[in-house]
Image (cartoon, rainbow, N blue to C red; front, side, top):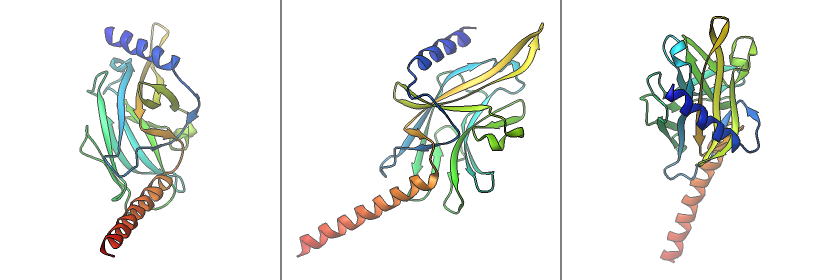
Length: 215
């Protein structure tokens, strides 16, 4: 009960500080300067997990919207993670890979083509639900991505679902994750291309400096 009340209190604080509220299906990293590029994830609300058979997991995924398919997945939080768990995702845009501090699997989009978007997913009771509605049965809108402004976090990914009933009252399960150094919407190509050009540009600048020193 303490865990539930703490989570709800944090949720109320976070929602009170929400700015530019709106729902999105995808997000992109914004820390892309080529130096220790990172995004953070913080598990700040979790409720009704004891109503589900295996707990709740959270992951990020890459989807090709041209084929409406998930092409890569990265685990962020597992079913045994408790409130206030934190994860750091490190982005390597030069090699087009990413790793998570909390899992052994990561992204590798170096050989992928198509229109790639980054989304958030939650798994419970053997099912996985996605922020891209087209990946859910019946195009169901089950996962929300919202813009927030709270303690350095930019986005919130969350879901809530009815998982049963108790004396006629619905039982809910849900989870919310705050994410930093990201922005709502966009495609992965929009992130990767400018970063690559910036690195190339810095290389040319270095060559120019060397040439001036030798002249």
